[in-house]
Every structure is written in structure tokens, then in C-alpha cells.
Image 1 (spheres, rainbow, N blue to C red):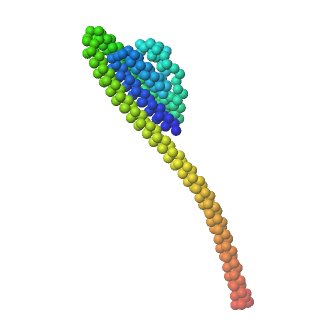
Image 2: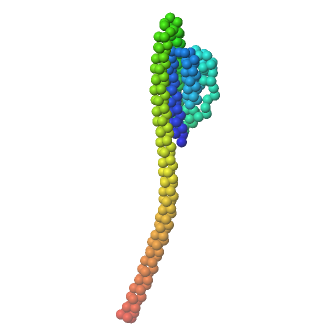
Image 3: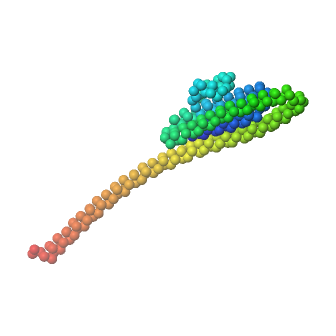
Length: 254
């Protein structure tokens, strides 16, 4: 069951990583308004929090300051971690090789998350520059033309968001199928274990029967040897008697 939990945890990490990348792409392409950018940042913050709970990565308290974001975005990102995270499961592995492999994977996920944070910061800078530029153009350009451009941009963003959502749903369905296959595999292993136990019990019964048969054969062999010895003694006694009688009849003077 531990392997199944590890696999589920890894699948969730991959899912959150893909969602973060998709949201960062949306942020980099966001040209306003500011409320839309804020909403996207809140979603990214939530996905980072969930991802961190599954990885168990420890950050210093100054992480948000280094990233350049306010506590409005990064506050909940530093909350208490889940008890069932990949790092903890790695440290609880019995085999040292499995433990080292999982901890190495944790480090890789941590580096990937740091890379995503850097991309997040760059995307916010690019989006803020784009929003500032667009606002300046709106002041200079014709209102109608600007409105049409914004409409086309929003339609393009909506289509991109729809495509990303569909891709994430497909990934979610694939992970669900993998979890179901894991459950079926566990059920098969349980059935095989019961069969092995039953076979072992039958083997023990057969072993007892064989040992009893061996004792009986040994006993019969001993009895056969005794019978042969008695027959030999009786035959010897008979021959001695015959010889004695012949001696008395044929050689009475002896």
C-alpha cells in the first residue's frame, strides 16, 4: 500500500506543477485588468501551497520578501504542512535505496518549484509592464480601436484557458485510471497471497502424511528382518535335528 500512496502523491505533485505552469503562462499573457491579474496570482498561490504540502519543502521566513510579492499573495503559502508528504514517506521507507531515490525526487521537485517561482515573478513583471503599456495606449489611441483590441485579447485568453482546462481534465482522468489500476493490482496480490497460504497448508499436511508413511515402512522393514532371523534359526534347528537322527541311524557306534 505504501507504493500506491507514493504514486498518488507523485501524481498530485505533477498535476499541481502542470496547473502552476498553465497559470504562469496565463499571467505572462495577461494584459489586464489588474483584478484579473490578482485573481490569477491567488490561484497560483493556492497551487503552490498545495504543491508544497505534498513535497514538504521548508522555506525560510524571508522567502516571500526575496520573491518580491506582498503578504497578500504569499501569506497562506507558508502555512502548516500536510502529514502525508513525499519527503516524509521517503524517510519512512525500509530500503535505503528507496529512501535515497524518493529524497532525490523531493529535491528535484523542490528545484522545479523554485524555478516556477522565478517564472512566476517574471510573468508578473511582464504582465504589469503590459498592463501599464496598454493603459498608456488607451489614453493615446482611439477608444473604439482599443476596445476591439482588448476584446480580441480576452477572446484569445479565454480560448487558451479553455484549452489548458481541457488538458488538465484529461490528465486528471489519466491519473484516476492509474489509481484504479493500482487498486486492482493490490486486489490481485491479496488473492495470490491467500492462494500461497492455502498451498502452504496443504504442503504441511502432505509432509505429515509422508513422515507417518516413512515410520510405518521403517517398522515393517524391522519386522521383516526379525521374521527372516526366526526362519533362519528354525531352519538351522531343523537341519541340526535331521543330522542328529541320521547320525544315530547310520553310525550308532559313534
